[in-house]
Length: 254
View (cartoon, rainbow, N blue to C red):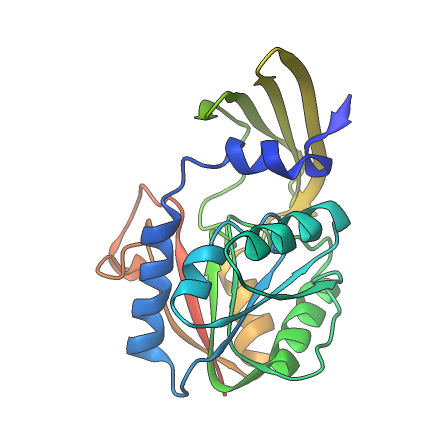
C-alpha cells in the first residue's frame, strides 16, 4: 500500500479541515505581541505540504520550508508558483540542520516535532537556535504532550472538488519508559473514478513539558513566552486543569 506522504495532493485534502487563515492570523498576533525584532523571513520546520504558505506570503513575508520529503517540497514549490511567488525550500531533517542565514520567525505545525531521543531533541533546539535571530519567535503547535500517553482513535472525511479522503488515525502505546508510541494513518481516496488506499505508520516519542523546557530554555538560548490551549492566546495552560487540545507554545530566542 502506498505512503500518503508520496501523494501531497491527497495529504493536503486529508488535513484541509484546519482553518489555516485563522492559524496564520494567530501567528501574526503572536509576532505583533511577543517578537522583539521585525519579521521579514519565516521558516516552517517539517513543512510538508506547507498549508499556511499562501497566507504567509500574502502577509508580505519571505517563506522558507524545511522537510525531508522531496514530493512534499515540490508540491509546496508548485503551490507558491501558482500564485506568483518564489520560496526557498530545504531538504533536511529537523534534528540537525543549518541555514545559510538566520530567519526572523520559525514555526512547526500539528505535532511534527519528530525526535526519537533526548539527544535529538537537544540537537533540534541547538539547530533552531542557530537558524533564528535573537529576539525572534519559535511557534510550536501540538508538540508537547501535556497528558499521559494513551491509545487513541479518530476518523474524519474531507473533500475538495472531485476528491474525497476518508481518514482513520490511531495511536498505540508501545513503551512508556521510552515514551514511544506508534502513530498510524490510513486514507481511502476517491478522486473522480480513481480509488486509492494510502497509509503511513511510524514510531514517535512523546515530549513532556519539563523535558521540553530543559532542552529549550536550559540547554539552548530560548525563553518561554507562554503556552495556550486550542490556539487561543486568551487561554493560558497555567489556568487549565483538563481538556487540553492542540496547545500552542511560543519561545523567544535570547
